[in-house]
Length: 172
Length: 73
Image (cartoon, rainbow over all chains, first blue to last red):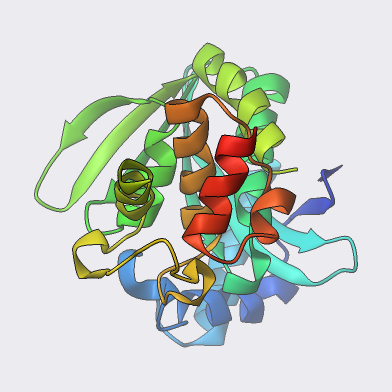
């Protein structure tokens, strides 16, 4: 499965992408607000092998984003499917990706809402990750929990669709 | 202009650490990135009901240039 739109391509993660994922997750700047990852490539490959089983069952989709020249830009993931709700995560992009990181986020949500038929998206953001928090708040999501570390949000399909059009206009 | 600068500054990760004025070359600020750029565009749309596209924003260097673009629309 590949999603190609707005000058980027999202394709499902393969074992061969393990090194790229590690390079993102071990990047000093990018790893500040994500769960810790070990540097062992074989563990990352094993994780992807397990993920591919969940992918085949339709339980989870983990995407690698590339530009149209085939340069790897980042990753995004939808998982933890519960009824009409999915969770969004693993949104990590190289700084060089620029606004393509936002387009990838929009396309991932669009795929989950429009193609998979979900009605709600949930996601957690570290309170200290202020730039990402600012970005997500632009969608006016509902806050579903808050603790010392994180804020949990829920975004509905109609709200997403309304914001999506405006945001894509800004990104031109 | 002062109100614009204040709102512009609020879009950064570390607003309290920043000294921003009309002549600041905002792309040179350490915490300027694509998400901050998007937040600035979104703030302008919310506050001024004006669309500044990414291409237009890329052509601006200073806060004043961006402000002039906003008021010219």
